[in-house]
Length: 159
Image 1: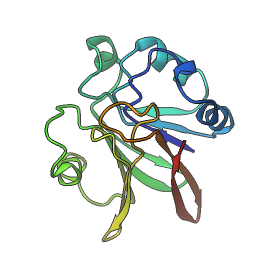
Image 2: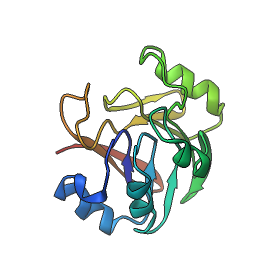
Image 3: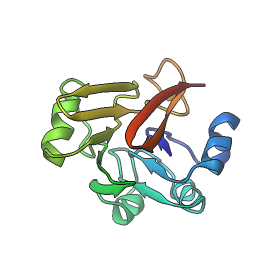
Image 4: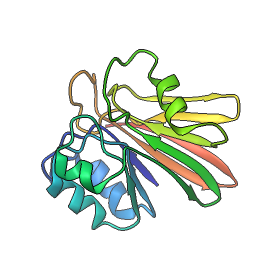
């Protein structure tokens, strides 16, 4: 499973080749908002199983197609996804997405800060893949890879 956020991309080929390869092989793609291009969103959806939410920088068209938050179950794991779509300060971001999505989740995937995070608090994993294109204020390009086989194996990959 590949996890993206804050791509701020016009087209799929704006992503680094390493990410494109992983996307083609992924059984599932999750995007936590700020695509900034409807064409890019359409191309991601065309790759296979896709779940995504819109971010604060997404157009009205994208906001009309995607929810601002979602809770899905993939391979028996309950995953909450939020950008958050209202934007705002990156401080207290984890708490804001938790309050949007509620408790009783195995994992919360979020974006907005452009800074990767991979931590567990209580029984919940908080996972921010950072920015796959290195959009400011990211210091480098990152994305997430998840493997769910009993436990949730998670990795932030630096390009």
